[in-house]
Length: 337
Ligand code: NAD
Image (cartoon, rainbow, N blue to C red; front, side):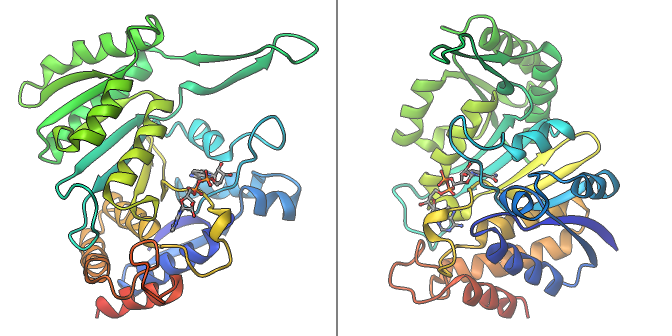
């Protein structure tokens, strides 16, 4: 029996997480879900977006399965709870795989990219303030450390080796941000020769975006600092069929959190339109992390069958479909039998 902290999240979160939990339970794996709250849902219920009870649960389980959380844009509202959780549990590696599904028609048909994003430093370190009482000058500080760069770049190369990948590309902006991005690139250049079996490439981030939409097949594993990884992973999602398909793992030395890449999607909340695939695939990543490979493979096979057949899928995958979140979840459970 594995104990997992379950945070259903905001917006479409509860609806997709309920399908994911239903499917994971139907796989036969024994999980004791400890429900906890964070984000807007927690703020409304407990007056804080990250209650002590939620952290007490993760302190114990060291493992969370989380739906998307709403974060207000701009100066109003609380700071991102996603960023807070990643920093508190030192979940330094954010791994986001994007691969074509044969049944989902996109511009390219052989995309297979894994973004390995540094998850605790960079421009998302949370060092932001106004410099004047009138609040007409604002400053954000990016923090890049040698230790933080070494562990994420080592992680990317080890991931490539362990997963039979051929190439690691570091995406950076060291031509302009000579200290922060320069340090990250220097560390990548130092570490690359330790992995002679893995091809090493480097691309400036803006050119990388152009290359990615022209010919994404030249990318395999990508490693980058926090904000570039955030942006690039939505780009890779667009290449393979949208945000409804891409899972993410947040990995630390002694804790991990699994979630979808997408957010709480307020535009489709409450309409039974949300695609549950991304969080289900995040569940698959979590089961592999727990060593439950048979259950993970069983779920993945069922998800692939349903998505590739394209009948019982949400409208983001098949605009002709009348199928909703719940019906798609039911089809995946049926495909596991
Ligand atoms: P979003 O990812 O919520 O939505 C972007 C677009 O993708 C929308 O049109 C949405 O309908 C669509 N989409 C997203 N997930 C989908 C799914 N499962 N099925 C079908 N369509 C889907 O991004 P946003 O609108 O920029 O952000 C909304 C909120 O989510 C913000 O408060 C943001 O801060 C938050 N957010 C949270 C996380 C997280 O919790 N990890 C990640 C990203 C954004």
